[in-house]
Image (cartoon, rainbow, N blue to C red):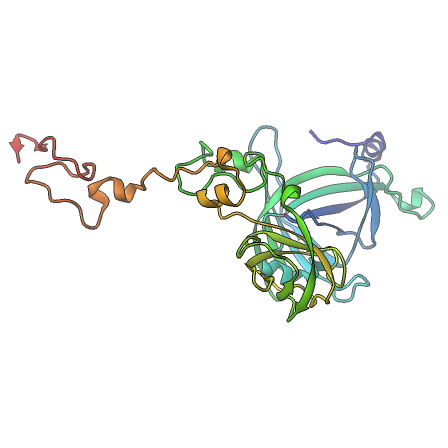
Length: 337
């Protein structure tokens, strides 16, 4: 069921309106970008939130057919986005990078997209002014599952949340050595804010290599994130691939769009490799560890799946537990072998 204001319902009943689409893009880092396929920027709210936001132009946005129906069948929306170099808002930057480059770097992977439709009275009925006050109708909400960036455009595949009902592995938790939780999620129970510390840049070689005044142990911040709170990269977040205690050296997974300056401040938090030793030694959270380290993988459980199985006597059944003795013979028809 879609929520629409009384004003929107009245506009639709009159069958005379201007329609456009609004797109809210929320990255996994929490950064939000808003665009419209209309000719001019619009300031509108998604009914019934009441909070108005500005939706920018600068992108040519086209989408494929979108089928929705009552029930639990999931839908997929395909978007093709092309930057408009001639737009006054050009270049469109995502995380500090031009859109297509950000797509190649993986910034849009797993991002949430909400598409809403805005219905407005014809300008001839409002004195030549477009009135977005009726509010937009939330039409589609989903997660980006595939990104393909070309020279001039990017193609996004977005699945709504109902798709997960058919694609999600059940039960969710599987037997594996690594923890089934993600650090700082509800199952992990840890709060990211409790492990976040602040620091400052001491030296910087480029946008991906710099030293800091941090003194934590080697590798402590690896797989975590760093968010700058001042300087040319203020507000930008990068994933950490390496941290060394001796020099406070940080290497990020992708370079920031600009080299940080000496004294630039940041907040930083550690990540987790989902291993038992890390959960215990680094986070002291073993009570919520959800890995099954002592369950052997299938290849080592059955002798039929190993490259060097134990010697079996003639007629023994294949697939015995390693180290066990044959317990019977296999019969084929009337012949016993």
